[in-house]
Length: 117
Length: 112
Image (tube, rainbow over all chains, first blue to last red; front, side):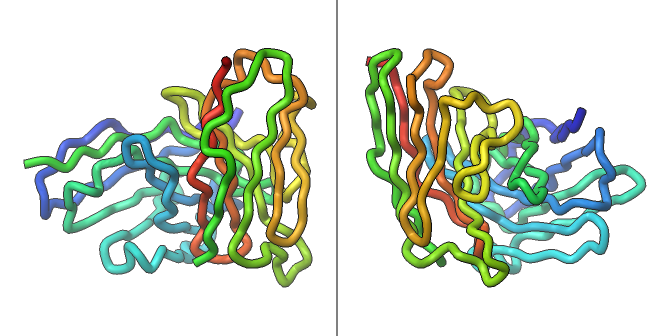
Protein backbone atom coordinates (compact mmCIF):
# COMPACT_ATOMS: atom_id res chain seq x y z
CA UNK A 1 0.00 0.00 0.00
CA UNK A 2 1.09 3.58 -0.55
CA UNK A 3 2.93 5.14 2.38
CA UNK A 4 4.46 8.56 2.88
CA UNK A 5 6.70 8.66 5.93
CA UNK A 6 7.99 12.04 7.03
CA UNK A 7 10.95 12.98 9.19
CA UNK A 8 10.55 13.82 12.84
CA UNK A 9 9.85 16.99 14.76
CA UNK A 10 12.38 19.82 14.67
CA UNK A 11 13.06 22.83 16.87
CA UNK A 12 14.87 25.69 15.18
CA UNK A 13 15.95 29.18 16.13
CA UNK A 14 14.73 32.20 14.18
CA UNK A 15 16.83 32.74 11.07
CA UNK A 16 17.77 29.07 10.73
CA UNK A 17 16.70 26.61 8.03
CA UNK A 18 14.85 23.32 8.23
CA UNK A 19 14.74 20.42 5.78
CA UNK A 20 11.84 17.97 6.04
CA UNK A 21 11.84 14.65 4.20
CA UNK A 22 8.99 12.54 2.85
CA UNK A 23 9.86 8.94 1.94
CA UNK A 24 7.43 7.28 -0.46
CA UNK A 25 6.71 3.60 -0.95
CA UNK A 26 4.10 1.38 -2.53
CA UNK A 27 3.96 3.07 -5.95
CA UNK A 28 6.19 4.16 -8.85
CA UNK A 29 7.78 7.25 -7.33
CA UNK A 30 8.67 9.05 -10.57
CA UNK A 31 5.14 8.89 -11.98
CA UNK A 32 3.55 11.36 -9.57
CA UNK A 33 3.78 14.84 -8.17
CA UNK A 34 4.18 15.67 -4.50
CA UNK A 35 2.80 18.74 -2.80
CA UNK A 36 3.83 20.35 0.46
CA UNK A 37 1.38 22.17 2.70
CA UNK A 38 1.57 23.41 6.24
CA UNK A 39 -0.88 23.92 9.08
CA UNK A 40 -0.19 26.39 11.87
CA UNK A 41 -1.78 25.59 15.25
CA UNK A 42 -5.57 25.86 15.01
CA UNK A 43 -5.39 27.14 11.44
CA UNK A 44 -6.31 25.97 7.97
CA UNK A 45 -3.94 24.55 5.38
CA UNK A 46 -1.45 26.59 3.37
CA UNK A 47 0.20 25.41 0.16
CA UNK A 48 3.98 25.81 -0.16
CA UNK A 49 4.77 24.18 -3.47
CA UNK A 50 4.94 21.12 -5.69
CA UNK A 51 7.44 18.91 -7.47
CA UNK A 52 6.97 16.37 -10.21
CA UNK A 53 9.07 13.45 -9.03
CA UNK A 54 9.77 12.31 -12.59
CA UNK A 55 11.25 15.43 -14.19
CA UNK A 56 11.93 17.51 -11.08
CA UNK A 57 9.85 20.45 -12.24
CA UNK A 58 8.79 22.60 -9.32
CA UNK A 59 6.34 25.38 -8.62
CA UNK A 60 6.20 27.44 -5.45
CA UNK A 61 3.74 29.70 -3.75
CA UNK A 62 4.70 33.33 -4.34
CA UNK A 63 4.24 33.83 -0.62
CA UNK A 64 7.26 31.55 0.02
CA UNK A 65 9.22 32.24 -3.15
CA UNK A 66 12.89 32.53 -2.34
CA UNK A 67 12.53 30.79 1.02
CA UNK A 68 11.27 27.34 0.03
CA UNK A 69 13.02 24.72 -2.08
CA UNK A 70 11.56 21.32 -2.93
CA UNK A 71 13.86 18.58 -4.26
CA UNK A 72 13.73 14.87 -4.79
CA UNK A 73 16.09 11.91 -4.60
CA UNK A 74 14.66 9.42 -7.07
CA UNK A 75 16.73 6.35 -6.08
CA UNK A 76 15.69 6.95 -2.45
CA UNK A 77 12.05 7.66 -3.39
CA UNK A 78 12.24 10.72 -1.14
CA UNK A 79 11.09 14.30 -1.53
CA UNK A 80 12.54 17.13 0.55
CA UNK A 81 11.21 20.53 1.51
CA UNK A 82 13.66 23.13 2.80
CA UNK A 83 12.48 26.39 4.33
CA UNK A 84 15.04 29.09 5.13
CA UNK A 85 15.11 32.28 7.21
CA UNK A 86 12.68 30.77 9.69
CA UNK A 87 10.41 33.04 11.74
CA UNK A 88 8.16 32.28 14.68
CA UNK A 89 5.12 32.26 12.39
CA UNK A 90 6.64 29.35 10.45
CA UNK A 91 5.82 27.16 13.44
CA UNK A 92 3.47 24.57 11.96
CA UNK A 93 2.93 20.95 11.01
CA UNK A 94 4.29 20.36 7.53
CA UNK A 95 2.68 17.70 5.32
CA UNK A 96 3.59 16.07 2.03
CA UNK A 97 0.75 14.80 -0.15
CA UNK A 98 0.82 12.69 -3.32
CA UNK A 99 -1.24 14.02 -6.20
CA UNK A 100 -3.00 11.72 -8.66
CA UNK A 101 -5.79 12.28 -11.17
CA UNK A 102 -8.14 11.65 -8.27
CA UNK A 103 -6.69 14.45 -6.20
CA UNK A 104 -4.41 14.32 -3.19
CA UNK A 105 -4.83 10.65 -2.40
CA UNK A 106 -2.14 10.08 0.19
CA UNK A 107 -0.71 12.23 2.97
CA UNK A 108 2.31 11.94 5.21
CA UNK A 109 1.82 11.85 8.96
CA UNK A 110 3.09 15.42 9.33
CA UNK A 111 6.29 16.93 10.72
CA UNK A 112 6.10 19.53 13.47
CA UNK A 113 8.53 22.40 13.03
CA UNK A 114 8.82 24.74 16.01
CA UNK A 115 10.65 28.04 15.61
CA UNK A 116 11.69 29.48 18.94
CA UNK A 117 14.63 31.20 20.52
CA UNK B 1 -5.20 33.91 -5.53
CA UNK B 2 -8.57 32.14 -5.45
CA UNK B 3 -10.25 32.64 -2.08
CA UNK B 4 -12.29 29.72 -0.75
CA UNK B 5 -15.03 30.64 1.74
CA UNK B 6 -16.76 27.96 3.78
CA UNK B 7 -20.00 28.20 5.73
CA UNK B 8 -20.76 27.45 8.47
CA UNK B 9 -17.48 27.40 10.38
CA UNK B 10 -19.04 25.21 13.03
CA UNK B 11 -21.78 22.62 12.68
CA UNK B 12 -23.16 20.88 15.79
CA UNK B 13 -25.17 17.89 14.56
CA UNK B 14 -27.26 15.20 16.22
CA UNK B 15 -26.13 11.65 15.47
CA UNK B 16 -28.07 10.23 12.55
CA UNK B 17 -29.05 13.67 11.25
CA UNK B 18 -27.75 15.25 8.04
CA UNK B 19 -25.06 17.91 7.77
CA UNK B 20 -24.24 20.26 4.93
CA UNK B 21 -21.20 22.46 4.30
CA UNK B 22 -21.02 25.15 1.66
CA UNK B 23 -17.87 26.31 -0.15
CA UNK B 24 -17.74 29.31 -2.43
CA UNK B 25 -14.76 30.28 -4.58
CA UNK B 26 -13.88 33.83 -5.59
CA UNK B 27 -13.68 32.77 -9.24
CA UNK B 28 -14.80 29.87 -11.37
CA UNK B 29 -12.99 26.60 -10.71
CA UNK B 30 -13.54 25.25 -14.23
CA UNK B 31 -10.10 24.47 -15.66
CA UNK B 32 -9.25 24.99 -19.32
CA UNK B 33 -9.25 21.17 -19.66
CA UNK B 34 -12.95 21.14 -18.70
CA UNK B 35 -12.44 19.63 -15.25
CA UNK B 36 -13.29 21.32 -11.96
CA UNK B 37 -10.58 20.58 -9.42
CA UNK B 38 -12.56 21.03 -6.24
CA UNK B 39 -11.92 18.50 -3.48
CA UNK B 40 -13.15 17.96 0.04
CA UNK B 41 -10.85 16.81 2.83
CA UNK B 42 -11.64 15.48 6.29
CA UNK B 43 -9.26 15.99 9.20
CA UNK B 44 -9.98 14.04 12.35
CA UNK B 45 -8.41 15.30 15.58
CA UNK B 46 -4.67 14.68 15.63
CA UNK B 47 -4.64 13.20 12.13
CA UNK B 48 -3.47 14.41 8.72
CA UNK B 49 -6.16 15.40 6.24
CA UNK B 50 -7.82 12.65 4.23
CA UNK B 51 -9.32 12.89 0.73
CA UNK B 52 -13.11 12.40 0.68
CA UNK B 53 -14.33 13.87 -2.61
CA UNK B 54 -12.46 14.90 -5.76
CA UNK B 55 -13.51 16.81 -8.87
CA UNK B 56 -16.67 18.07 -7.12
CA UNK B 57 -18.63 14.86 -6.77
CA UNK B 58 -16.39 11.79 -7.01
CA UNK B 59 -16.15 9.81 -3.81
CA UNK B 60 -12.62 8.56 -3.16
CA UNK B 61 -12.00 4.86 -2.62
CA UNK B 62 -13.20 3.64 0.77
CA UNK B 63 -15.25 6.75 1.58
CA UNK B 64 -18.72 5.84 2.89
CA UNK B 65 -21.61 6.65 0.58
CA UNK B 66 -23.21 8.91 3.19
CA UNK B 67 -20.73 11.55 1.93
CA UNK B 68 -21.64 13.33 -1.31
CA UNK B 69 -20.41 16.39 -3.15
CA UNK B 70 -22.16 18.65 -5.60
CA UNK B 71 -21.93 22.04 -7.25
CA UNK B 72 -20.47 23.84 -10.20
CA UNK B 73 -18.59 27.00 -11.13
CA UNK B 74 -18.12 28.82 -7.83
CA UNK B 75 -20.60 27.13 -5.48
CA UNK B 76 -20.08 23.71 -3.95
CA UNK B 77 -21.59 21.61 -1.20
CA UNK B 78 -20.55 18.63 0.89
CA UNK B 79 -23.38 16.64 2.44
CA UNK B 80 -23.31 13.95 5.07
CA UNK B 81 -26.62 12.13 4.90
CA UNK B 82 -26.54 10.71 8.44
CA UNK B 83 -23.74 11.86 10.72
CA UNK B 84 -21.92 9.16 12.66
CA UNK B 85 -19.56 9.60 15.61
CA UNK B 86 -16.51 8.92 13.42
CA UNK B 87 -17.39 11.93 11.23
CA UNK B 88 -16.33 14.39 13.94
CA UNK B 89 -13.54 16.60 12.68
CA UNK B 90 -12.78 19.54 10.44
CA UNK B 91 -13.73 19.56 6.78
CA UNK B 92 -11.89 21.61 4.17
CA UNK B 93 -12.65 22.41 0.58
CA UNK B 94 -9.64 22.95 -1.64
CA UNK B 95 -9.12 24.05 -5.23
CA UNK B 96 -6.32 22.88 -7.49
CA UNK B 97 -7.62 24.47 -10.69
CA UNK B 98 -5.20 27.36 -10.44
CA UNK B 99 -1.90 27.87 -8.64
CA UNK B 100 -1.52 28.56 -5.81
CA UNK B 101 -3.64 25.74 -4.45
CA UNK B 102 -5.94 27.25 -1.82
CA UNK B 103 -8.11 25.94 0.99
CA UNK B 104 -11.22 27.00 2.83
CA UNK B 105 -11.01 28.00 6.50
CA UNK B 106 -12.44 24.68 7.60
CA UNK B 107 -15.78 23.65 9.10
CA UNK B 108 -15.80 21.88 12.44
CA UNK B 109 -18.40 19.11 12.66
CA UNK B 110 -19.21 18.07 16.20
CA UNK B 111 -21.91 16.04 17.88
CA UNK B 112 -24.58 17.91 19.85
